[in-house]
Length: 194
Length: 57
Image (cartoon, rainbow over the protein chains, first blue to last red):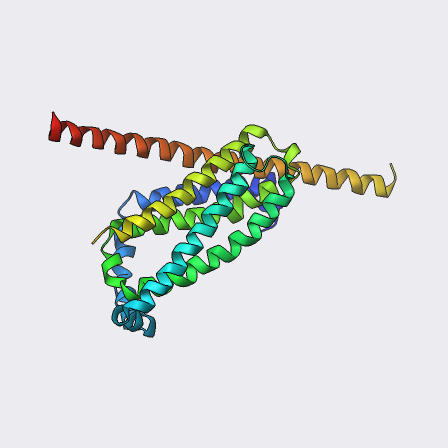
């Protein structure tokens, strides 16, 4: 979007609008109509090839779930290393840029692994997760995490780290850790529900 | 001012504006996440304390 339309604070305005929309959607009845309309999609998911394999072949589900957990562990590692470096508590003898760029590359592939294995697992237990409130919390946290990482955190750390306000940098690192830990926690919560 | 100097000055201004925008958006989002987490965990801990009081007095 050309910056001229929203002025010099395009990213800030869009970010605030997305946060307002997400909060409005989550805490009003707007979500209920979407929730009802999504039911046929989840029913269809169970009838797909992934759904049949996930439901009938326990070993396949368990193997894919192992990949999902490894992806989550790698992603968590990237977040801890990268944000730990921004907070000045980890790898302080390695330049910021090197840690952030390398962690970001691994983060991308870990996220792809998580999404791919997550879709397979969701097909196998589609109707179970449809009725679990925590699954929707996880999706909200995951969406927030992905948007935060690629639309807020990444453009910020693309600048020279020394030129960024240190308080904002540390707040960004803490927020990043919080949101990805919430994704992991809600993921495990799904495992303990139903 | 030569054309090259003018371009360099324009680039610097654009870079500075982009940094300000990126910092403000990060501040807004990070504050929202941190405040939301603080409120959420406060009520979670409160709820667990009440449950423990009910169970053990």
